[in-house]
Length: 230
Image (cartoon, rainbow, N blue to C red):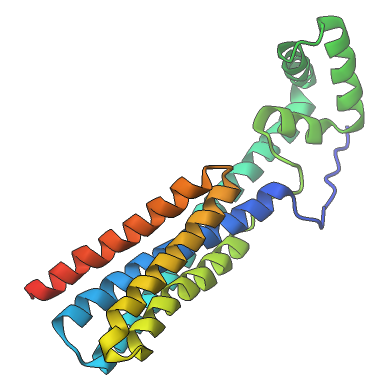
């Protein structure tokens, strides 16, 4: 039996959501880590160049760290998916009846009668054997694997963008208003990432936004205290 895998060009919803997820996490991490360094250093010194260099260094470190972490994580998931597909391709050749039974049981568990389930299973395995078994057993869309590069670049740019806003606020706001500018920047960016993440996860927008803002403000408070101590 010859099994052909078609290559799909259009991304699935799961692939798009994975890229967006990496972006949201990167942005949130960029905001909190960069503002933490900025506030700590600004509490210890008023030299703007020192503050800017410290914030910029942390922004770059955070962005590349998030990107490399996403690349490693999604690569592992992609390898696992490919291994599962290879396993099922082999099983279709050496244990076709077992695969047929697995597909039948899937539909029986969905409430379809055993007689109808076996007919569905035979029809599906006759037309799209590998596509059918990987979808039923692993919820994998054949030919669509999560792209580690998409996740890495999404995380890289969003982490940099998230940290850039408080960095600019601290660096360029007038001395008398710099703390207000930083707090406003953190509240705005934290609220934005909370809103996006809640929409992606079908969560409660209000709770997610308030939670992110509170976490951002707590981060500022803690790091300001640490900076004052030293």
